[in-house]
Length: 531
Image (tube, rainbow, N blue to C red):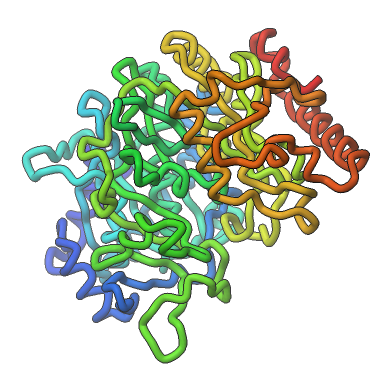
């Protein structure tokens, strides 16, 4: 049977049927996957029982090596460009055949999973991996269906083979590593990289394409939690801005830390686990994450303290992008259903390397839409190849690398839902204060937590706000448990003229970036620009 002639729902089945049955392992439990990983020298056990692994040469995502197959489904819908690179369908099929041949004498681990906690909007998955620990990663990160809930015919397949490298001259890739999404065949091919984040972000990209188009659901790169009164909050931000840390609040219930959908019924988690950064992790600062790193969890690219099996979370010798992956139920205050209501508050998190954005400000609708489309932050070291220090970036909707559709599609959905459900939007600077990167200091976590708590508890509803002279956003003049000089951000700078110069420079960067949307966005959005 020719693989290329198969219907989409049998694409993965044909691959599995071509492999020796004795070398295909289905839905192994975590303990067995850990045993196999240890036996194959894929990792080591830490003092807490977590599995420590290395991802190889690549310790972060490789955005320039992510592709989408150009075909009838995608050609007129995908926002082609730097984030969405087209890939030839014929080249994809040949590459798939080469990977199938490569696997003919290899062991593979198969896992049935689901993306999307809302049963009305779920995407069935089938993960096929050559690494036992990658299969454990899929168990941890995706939702775990019962055997009678598996829908073979509808599954979107992930084939992850880090040992297989492409030949760029022949295969159409730019380098030996690649991640290619094919919406017609409903499969993602990943090769040449052991970084597990490519698996989860591949499926996130799939959901970012399907849900807005097919169901008018806003897919979001965000964390979400809910209070005891049922008030749901959303936290947008790129890696390193504090999504996981700030959403994992002991006084609230965690819905999820990274990927969600917002339907008419409310917010729902796409995943069944958390993938948290652990560089400089301390128990006293992030006790929930600390306690979750136990048997069944994975820690990536970390190192032991001398003569022990205790993880040294300060060790950056491999990368600053050290991470842990664990099922969401490892967090004691996780919402069992991974579902919340329509959000009352939204927080845009930015790690401002200029050090000029106020630590907290309230946005009106135009400003919220403007900042959502802008997605300003600084990429922090280790989250992507080549990033060794914070770098100014505008990542549309706080996740441009994962958005197949034009950004205005997501922005329109956000504006529609904000207005319908009367949602507050706050801009939070988790970056620098008192000066830019290298001069100032990173905002203290305790202050950021206090500001977010005040917003969630409606304590900022009764304080005075002042309009920022450059960014036009509303800055509260007092906040419980936060010194007033911290709120008055420019006062933390010794040189006020330098602050103004840097702030104006950033404002110009905002406007230059927004020019790419000015022809295709609502006029009211432009009203949210800096002054």
